[in-house]
Length: 347
Image (cartoon, rainbow, N blue to C red; front, side):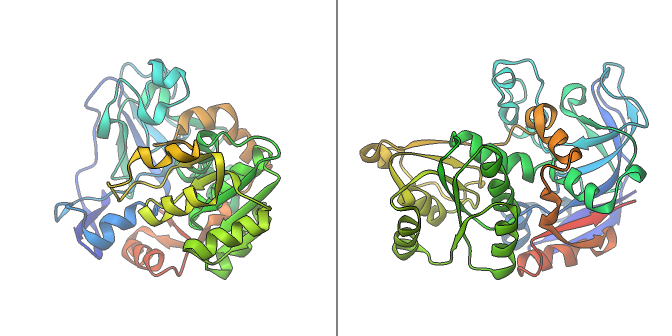
């Protein structure tokens, strides 16, 4: 089969590799229909991130058709159309029951997260609970709807996770830091949860317009102290909640800076910093929460229905489409901000 291989920083390629097989009784083999490039994939693509040369790539979002199942699988069958989340929660541990399957107690660390989805087939581990069935078959849906369904593998639940962790309530004033696909989905999520004002911090016209279409009420292009002052001017004071969707120290600084005392930060940007002391929030009574998104929980409870009912349209974050053979161009275009999020057609 064809699969994307990480060659070195700045280069991925498509190569022939062995097709995956069932190795455990709760494995599921899925034939991929659509996959994509995530903003978090760009960290390794751009810098290497200590990733081994000629190794399987980081891609972790897909929708596809179940081809084979292990003996313990009771929730899906061959032929089912499914969302393959980037997480593999069990559904039964204390964390999963609390709605935090993104950090399942039974699948610690990397065992709960996916990679290698930018390929023709995948082996989805711990598949009995985590996979989400989509009614019908891919041919039943428009390309626009397939895009929205694909966001449910990661970016839409991740944007929602930021809003949930920040406990966005009806009437809240919310600031979203980050105008990529996750930030765009955080805008949708804040609106879903009833925010009265949603300010997106963004410097890019196309991303600003997309967020305004999704429910943002204002845009701030400035950064640092100037950006914080502009946000406070727009909101008439500090924000109730800040949703950090980037993963840099500068983004966390912005999130903390726009809040009033007693405000709340929900962060879902994969952290690429390690020197932000928790004690720095003490003087403001700031609540800080975040981490890996609860993809299966949110999709099963309400996000899949919201997409199928047409209540939300997160698929608009896919601004360009590529063939699998052109995956390196998809990475380059995202890195160069020529597309917000790249969808990849496999079948």
